[in-house]
Length: 343
Image: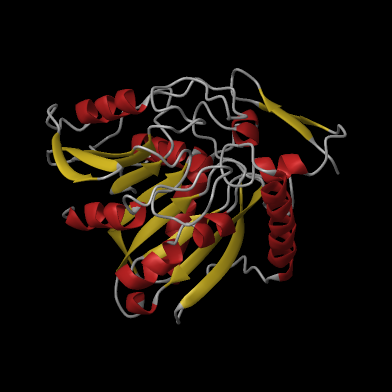
């Protein structure tokens, strides 16, 4: 099936069967879509289809059975009439103890496998000892590819269908807690692009569940935010992001026709919500990147890379004609931030 797709000014995804071929699928595979060299796009199409075939071949257990050994597991259940999937990676260090959890949300047009495998999160899980949980957004396809999250004002099918992603993610954590021993006071959320936007929504609407968030290349586009308690934030963004623009607005390379909130406005919002120090202190300065911290009981930190575009700092996943910034590692920095927080 060949699909033409666009997003309206209100962020709704509209799809119809036009003859524009499979390259669109590659264009929106790993986040908010970008243009790429033909060879790169063709490779993404092939990888996308191979991943879909692999997912269909792997068993998926609908029951929240106990996890007794280290490894990667896949589960699904029905939420509000929809089949929903999630992936759990349990490192060896997590066996036999109540381990922290990092909830990792893929970008718009991605899926849980891409999020887990392409940003080094499984490897970081093994080194740090946290349990990695990568849920899948809502997709038009049975394989779960090209999925999106309902982050409030964005993105795609999830917003169009008013999908209850907050409720779904709550249920995921409840189920994981029955499957393996977790520290319910140390459940953190991160996400790429649309997934980063969704992490902000979780901070607004599920602060009882989420200890802190680490959005990557996704700003706070929530329509209303009144968290019941402060939620610490560490935000990662590149100045040259052409999808979710650093200074806000609709990025020229994004297929989501949404006026994204700027990074400075998102940070200022959470500094106020968390009653953090309005004056930031530089806590890391290296060639190509700087991190500034607003101190407080619920701190707010922003790490800005000068280059890298719409990508995950420190990863090896190339996005179109942009290589991710190697000036800092988002995985290392966010885990240091999470680990510094008291329970």
